[in-house]
Every structure is written in C-alpha cells, then in structure tokens.
Amino acid sequence: MLTDERQNIGCILTPEIKRILQMKIDNLTVANQSIFESCPGYIIRVTEDNRIIQISPDLCTLLFINENYTSTDPQVSSHPLVTKLLTSSASVEITTEDNTLYQFSHSFFDNNTDDTRTHIFTNISIVLDLYGENQRLMEEARQLQLIDTDTSLLTQRALLLVMESQLSQCRRYETPLSVIKLNINFDTDCADFKLKLLKITHLLKDQLRWSDMIARSGSKQFTILLPTTDKHSSLQLINKLKQVIGQWHSDYSVSFGISEWNKNMSSSELLDDCEQSLINSITTSTNNGQDVA
Image 1: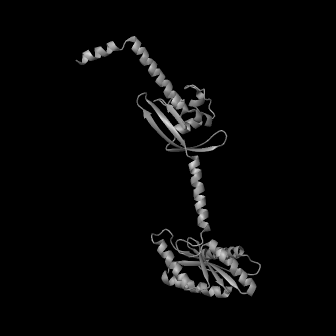
Image 2 (image 1 turned 90 degrees about the vertical axis):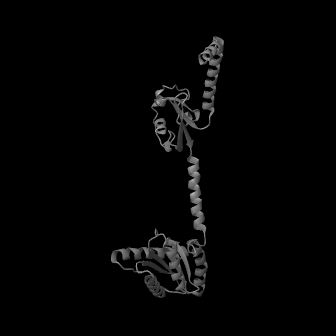
Image 3 (image 1 turned 45 degrees about the horizontal axis):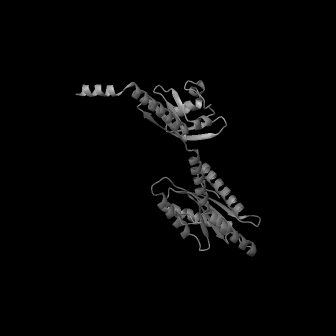
C-alpha cells in the first residue's frame, strides 16, 4: 500500500510541478535573506564549520566592513572584532575603529534545517550607561538626605546646615564652639552590625546635652557639634565617651579628632580641621597603640 502511495506521489511531481516548487524555494530563500538584511540589530550567521555566510548591514556599518562582501572575503573572516564577537560568552566589550566603546550581550541559536548557527548581539551600552547614571543619582540623593536611615541621626549635609546658624551665634556672642569626630573600631561585616550601631548611637546621645548635635559621618564615624564648649571641655567629654564604650564592649577602640572654632574658620574648614585631627589620631594610635587628640 505504501509503495503504491509513493509511486502516486512520484507521478504527481511532474517536471512542471518541480519547477514551480523550485521557484517557491528560491523565493523563500530570497525572502529569508531580505528579512535577515532588514532585521534591526547585530547578527552573524555561520556554517557548521564556523564559516561566516551572513552579517547584518548594521553590524557591517559598526565594524566598518564593506556591505558588499562575499562569504569568503578575508576582510570578514579575519576581522579581529568579528572573531572576538563570535568567540565571546554571554557578554562582550569591543572598541571600534572610531574609538567608540560598545558592550553587547551575546546569544545564539542553531538552525537544524541547514546546519547553521545564528549569533545575535544586543547593544547594552545605553542600558549600562543608564544604570551607572541611576547609581550616581541614587548616591547624590543619599548625600542630600538630612537624616541617616540607620541611626536617625543627622547626616553630614544636615550638620553643615546647622553649623552655619551656630557659627553666626558664636560670632555674635563671642562664644566657643568645638567639633569632635569619633571613629569607633568595630566589625562592619557582622550580622548584627545595625544593632551594634544603634547601641553605640544611644550610648553617645546619652552623654550629650540637649544643645549638642550629633551626626553620622561614616559607616562607623560620628561627628559631634558642641556649642559653648572649648577644646579642654571637649577632651573631658571624649574621655567619658571612651570609658562608656569600653565598659559596654572592651574590644572596641575609639579614635577621635577635636577642633575648636576660631573667627577665621568657615563651617567646612572647621570640619576639615577636625577630620585631619582624627586622621592624625588614627595614625598615632596605629603606631603607638594609644589615642591622641
């Protein structure tokens, strides 16, 4: 029965029908080529033995390859960027002849009907640029915050705003003002870091007056603004804070810097001077094993 059906089919495929079928196949091939050439994006099609047979026009333009190449054109087969693209993993970065940097994601699929592989490259440069810009804006927004989210203390920016009014009063009434910067040496990678950070915050706040202000100026660094306080009184407060923190956790060492305001100082200069004092304290502590203001 099957033999009879095959014979019938063979009879149906007359030369005229075969010619028509071949025309349709040729038209389909032309259509596929047209789709490939008009497809937006960057595509390379290769044979089973990795011979390049097609490259999308957009990719030719990007790589400065003549679009009228042939599949055996050495300009294509030996092009270093083409080779880099085809041998890349999930992502690849290239620099074209005009010194433009591109970043692509790379995927491919196999066509079992003609034993070819189609490589698809998606330009993700813009996405990565947008991600970088988003990270920059997030950092900028974080710096503009007035309240630290982990401790509910002032941020460095908020402290600068407060200091402007405080310095105005100091100039008017000729009263002293001091700034203390504390760096508390404890592990920031521990699982209960935030709980320890809150505990330290509460310990510091309990030792301050209502008029004093405290800000978190680093992951484990705090800045304390002390109105109507000279440097000598600030040192007494530091010794008290070190004692309180040591009683809570004897393994935590405290480095500190102190700066007393003078009439020639701006708020930023006062903080910079205090920061330098802290750096000197940390350096001295590392070298001598003790904290010095």
